[in-house]
Image (tube, rainbow, N blue to C red; front, side, top):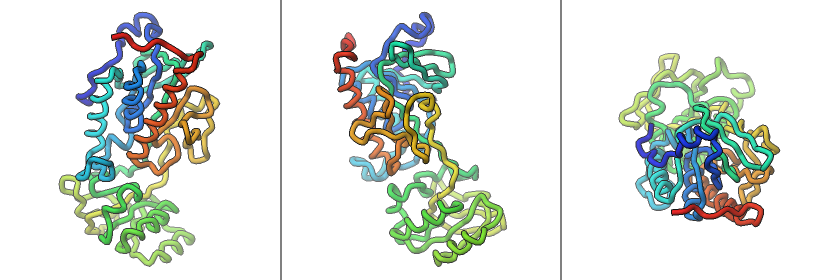
Length: 329
């Protein structure tokens, strides 16, 4: 449990009356960067807000965001989340640690959210910030390096490998695409085909076209010192010295399951389609932000998403049919 979860919803009262005691203006599903930024903005708009978070996603494992305004030396995902939660609580936002297992809409248009412990919460509007799940290979030492010396986003961290020897670990078209993107930052690359038994003819041609040395062997261990990559061990016994690496593994999934029962348009990639101006989905009163929607998957962009959606949620709640009194002191 994260120690900063201090603004819990009143679960005892909710259970006592079947979860109908409190009607929130907005429930935010997902307490990552986008969800917390939205909650802060909504709290400043005097809205009753509940954030439900299961402590998952990229912001939980990211060791260092180095491209965020005001943090020239970087800030970790957990630290940024902690600060965001503390700020939200000061604004009256309620936080609940848990997983949403069911989302329905009653005949009055009110959303009913059920968590794994069977607590229920009701809200006029809903903000989905459930992100995506990366297919990180289960390699010892990887978690310690993520966001510190092993990266996944060239937009965020290509700068960190500029003109440096860099491993690119992955498979399929994702591996080749990542290598091409990183050529802007470094031509000193070594490619490692991980997760496939052999390289087929088409990929062999693509690998050879890069002009970089490459290996087809699973990474079995990562040698690291306090998150700083030292070397990777391959299944064929080869040890590759390295200080920086990028992952390019296929198989990641967008966490859109809760929205599938609604009339929400979903792109072939699994990302939720939203109005670019408001971040509202094709289903009225449901908004989506962060890695759940298609963008460059940067923390700074997620913040913008959250604030933008919150502004339009507040506008919607001001409409005559949606008006509710502000929270009492």
